[in-house]
Length: 232
Length: 310
Image (cartoon, rainbow over all chains, first blue to last red; front, side, top):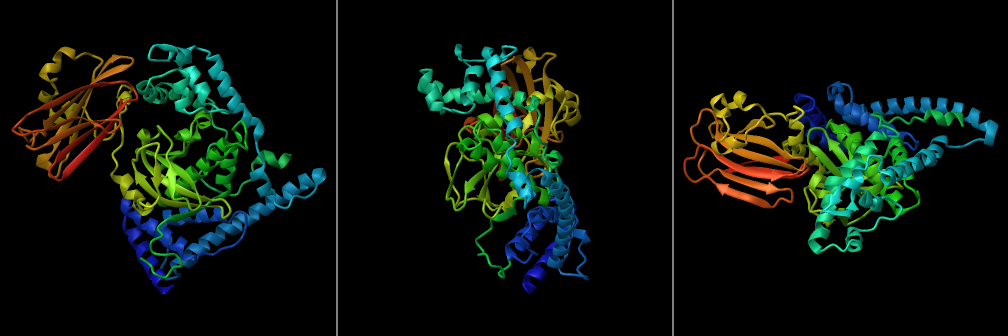
């Protein structure tokens, strides 16, 4: 413990000597993170939001190593304090959410013990199916005939529309199978996936982008409950 | 390193606890698949966890990423392809491959290799809600079973990313977007040098774009100017002229300067060495949009690679 403590103190001091974002600082912080995680010395508790608090703590402490005061506490105590602070906040937030959730739920189907787990496991099948169906529909309809016009080696029957349709689930034949289907010679069979990557995938990528994302990843990892779930 | 911990000194893998958000997003992406119970859905689930875990690690270190810019975040690409890419701002894409607990090898799917700067292998322990970043490897052949024994330590990833030179996107030059260090020839070498090479004057026309970068090979006196001219020929073909000239203070290119041109499969197309005093060297090539190539310049111990995409 003493050895770890000393090493961490030194590393944090070195990190502070280098400017934020510098390679040297990143390397030292990587060592701090690894040493602490492997030591098993951090505060541990079994709550559903523990990992969220842990991630937040690491991001914060690695961004602000100069906030560590070696005269007041050991590095592990500093990290623990920051971790517990976040755990407290999340517990309070969760209790608030839980109360609201239970109030709504009780009137319908009784009490759920762990609403967060419940939500994480609940499949959002409706908007999900839409993406698959929308993509297939777009490929099949090929509204501006762009997909059909992109052909492999003057073979109009091997075009972007045909290839993308084969790649989409539920059945995804291997490139070998696709090559056999179109009677390609070995060289053509080798070139087909390259053609697909370069000429066909960009169009699919563009379509995907135009559909937007269901959920942009947010930067923080707090244990938040999606708002719409509270009104079920 | 510290001897006082419960893990062996050889274990340099990095545990990243999975947050509620990671598990939520992974579940959501998996549920987009037509059959949420299928192998495909499981693949998307694990890929998403791997990408998010690496992203969370890089966030801790302060390495900037663009999670939503990757194919792994594109709902349509995710349906069709086995992708687990994470964009590192200004560098390129890391492939974050998930493996089961205790795996010895990792299957690299075919045809993604060309576009990745490195592969991070992520062991996912669903019971413990932890991702273990096992290590990384720079470019590898696609469609192979990668052995997990010889991975580089993840602790070395920051320095690997740091020295990586960004991919120069030539198509973006037409939109006036130039990578750091690529300046007009006049700015770098003065007016006189901006004249096109003799053999190329005939082809010179308004649509051409020309940029120059100084490459320092060891000392300042040994630096050379790399000049790239792009000449759009048709929608599917672009001619490219690569020139090397001595830096302003020098009359000749350094002797023994070696220039290697590599195609996107890292096959050598041209490998040439300057044996006597030369003022100028040029290479012609052509390619289609999306094609990649690299130029490697070697002088003694010093070596610089520049990677391009048309």
